[in-house]
Amino acid sequence: MQILGCILISLVGLRLVLSLWDSIRTQQHSANQRRKSLELLDERIASIRALRKQTETQQPHWNGYRKFRVDRKVLEADNICSFYLVPHDGKPLPSYRPGQFLTFRFQLPDQKMQKSKPVVRCYSLSDAPRPDYYRVTVKRVPSPPGVDAPEGRISNYFHDHVIEGDILDVQAPRGDFSLDPAEESPVVLVGGGVGVTPVLSMANTILETDIQRDVWFFLGVRCGREHPMREHLQQLDERYDRFHLMVCYSCPEECDESEKDFQREGHVNLAVIRETVKVCNFDFYICGPPPMMESLVPDLKDWGVPEEKIHTEAFGPATVNRAKKPSTPQKNQTDGENQPEITIQFSRSETCVTWDHNQQSLLDFALDQGIEIDSGCRAGSCGSCEVAVKQGEVEYTVEPSVEVEKGSCLACISCPKTNLVIEA
Ligand SMILES: Cc1cc2nc3c(=O)[nH]c(=O)nc-3n(C[C@H](O)[C@H](O)[C@H](O)COP(=O)(O)OP(=O)(O)OC[C@H]3O[C@@H](n4cnc5c(N)ncnc54)[C@H](O)[C@@H]3O)c2cc1C
Image 1: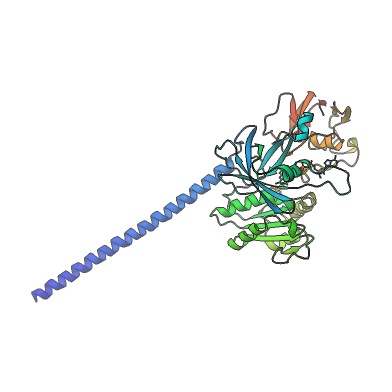
Image 2: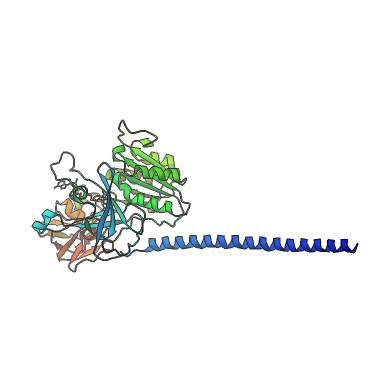
């Protein structure tokens, strides 16, 4: 009996020890689980903070021009080439907000002889921010059809003369056409032709975060030969459920396969977007040629997309933001009524004209008068439209983000405050 009692007590004791051990292990396991979830949460918070920090960085990371070496030159489609740039000084490469652009300065060989002004052009960063390189993707611009004019100067120079190992002068990334990669609401990205560059940078950035954000990506090109980054986009489509790709070819060729190379024949328009996205309350980021922007932006507004959710970038002369040219002389226009008459004298061109209050900037006004002023970003960011103001005062529509010499102004964001004499 005694032995039996001892065995029973030992068994009960063992049972107690085992259940105690079990409960300690369970507690340890749940503590480990909790710790892991907290670590994951911390990592997520840190990555969102890092993204936010990157997004909030408004100031350019260096002043003026910095030298970059062309590390790689890659053909992406007919007449579209990517250039991978690494800092020549070997110092760290600052990040940027997806959608921003770089400003390049070129002193072309024939210009050196004539000692004329360097040529400035902007090119969007076409990849997600990387620690070791910047990438821009340039389309060769031909002469306009039926016009006896030289082909695009810098885009052709990039294609024909810039080679691996070359050194280029580059300003820090800038631009307001950019999104917050830490946001969680779905986003619609639309690129037309080489206008795909900033929206591709946005898509790559979003998809590389672990934020489950739907990305609707529309690309409009003429045909397969002009389809940049085809494989990359298809890979994104296969890899991410939250990436929805719709490629439209306006003039597919015989070798282009529907459903494989492209999804729709025709242009990216409201009908295609509406049918695919269905909801009009997302943010839309659009960059494309003038006809695409001119039709799509008003159509999206008519569909009910709030104006503040439509974000655009124009590569050429701004097509969406630009004020319409007055169709009648200014004094007959309601907008112009009760406005003081202001005269603008372009001293070099020996032209004196009355300011049109419907114009958005001195640059647009000058170009409409046939007066040449260089321009790049048209957003007060690259400084290429700086002109000397010999008399009078201007006011800025937005604050310049480059330093402007005293006595000069950036024509792309200036309007006259008084009569002006301008060196142009
Ligand atoms: C913010 C921003 C981002 C951009 N991002 C990109 C990008 O990612 N990729 C890209 O490829 N481009 C981009 N661009 C456009 C780029 O900056 C250049 O405008 C483009 O490459 C054309 O420059 P170019 O020097 O080759 O042409 P330009 O020499 O400026 O010529 C432009 C056009 O005018 C014609 N022309 C020239 N002279 C005359 C004349 N006397 N009479 C009539 N026509 C004439 C040319 O034939 C050409 O068709 C961007 C622009 C901006 C503002």
